[in-house]
Image (cartoon, rainbow, N blue to C red; front, side):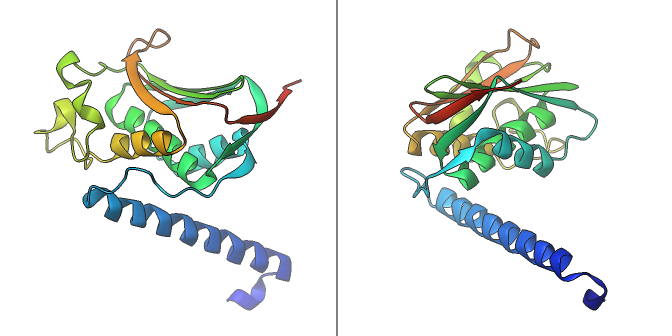
Length: 198
């Protein structure tokens, strides 16, 4: 019964539900745009946010399963980004690493003048012949014919679209940290202010 909740708890629940509904509505709209091939130049709602808040929300959103997911942020930083879309980008990268990587996933966030986001895993990595095509919509690379491996092949194309809409880019390389895949996103000039962690 909703009457059993104190007013402040009820307001907090309503606020959280409203925020989640708004977030999901934008995700669904992105999927529709993606299906129509219209993800270039996504409309952005830029605001100044603490990057650690985006990381915390993203970690909360993913189902890590049995994988150990760690996050490391070099500095607390305020960045000028679209928070919903950047959260979506980070969730997609983490979910991709959990699904196709091994048992370890590491999210690294670096903030100089640019915002750098890297997601490393200890899986097999992406075979050379698939490293370009994995960014295309509905493309699942080496997993394209594997019905046991879930996924629609849209996560990385959304990552690329979000990065490019912010004036940045996304790329793949072999992880020097965990030995598997490393997906990297750079958003130039996004950092508004930095504060070193104590």
